[in-house]
Amino acid sequence: MRQFFGTSQSGDLAAAVHGLSNPKFLMLLSNNIQFEAHVKALESLYPRVPSIGCIGMSYDTNIVESGVSVIAFLDDISATANVLEQVSTMPVKYIERMEKDLVKIGASAQDTVCIDFCSGNDACVLTTFNSCLKHRSIQLVGGTGDGGKVSANGKIYQDAVAYALVRNHSGRVKTYKENIYRPFGNYRFIASNTDRANYIIGSLNGTPAKQVYKSILNVTDEGILTQTFKNPFGKIDGNDTCIISIKEVSGNALACFRQVNDSDVLILLELADYKATVRQTIETIRRDFPKRSAVFSVNCLFRYKLFCEHNYMQEYLKDMATLGSHAGLVGYGEHYNNRFVNQSMTCVVFE
Image 1 (spheres, rainbow, N blue to C red):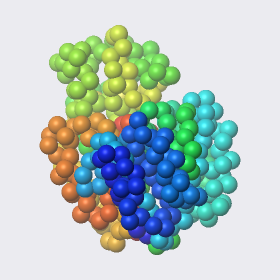
Image 2: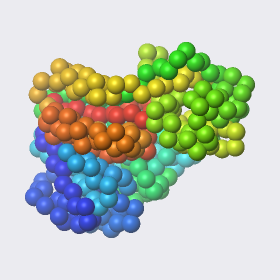
Image 3: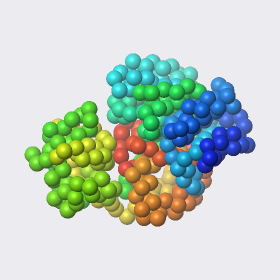
């Protein structure tokens, strides 16, 4: 297979897809103002080509903060795209669509990946997906776009998740997740007074969550939202740690980007040597895939801000480009198989 990346900082879709012919699958990454027009224009240019899209920043060797970008897969792949609606209430109502798509594409664990763009309620969406994908051991990578909108096959949806099943006829596929954080101290917290619907942590070990976070890290109320770049929470999940970013202060509570439940055990994390972690990820991919066709990734918005703050973003994209064709989305939450994570990078590698 081959991966194409085209972009226009001014939002000129025709310029972004210049030279693109016979794509098998399309991903549209647009801005809030032009998203609807870009969805219609892309469908007009490539009718009946499976496509998904969302609002968000994108990248290959450079970051695209606005305008429009198109990522296309070509040659030895087959794909199908679809949507699950009502994700805030009942996405499982539409799961039959995915079941039929899996059969349609002849999906298998070795060569098929699900890529999704979501408008919200990510944890519920991933549970719904997993009820269908787990039986075939199909891996998944995706993320949350901006503006509460996604697109699939030329149509725009709200309160929905657009997904594509992509089968690589040239070899294997494999998903990866990168965590640039490590445990900070020996803190262990039991969450309580949580609001699952609004992702709020009320108390930690019986003390207001805001007070706990401020006293440990010696920050002000205003400093909490930038301190989370360096010190997010973490939830132990088997041998893995799911990162939980702080979204805002809500009275004496903390609103997060990921759901926390009463009695969840949380730890505090700190930024590790992120450059060394990136190098390790690249070497792992090289070892697993000596020959690579493409890498598609989703990087968290907070990672993007952190890397920019440390003047590392351009170096990061340059390092990832050593793997070959690398492109992706800056998301508001990252999906890795059946997990919804924050402040992470997830990716799929095609052999």
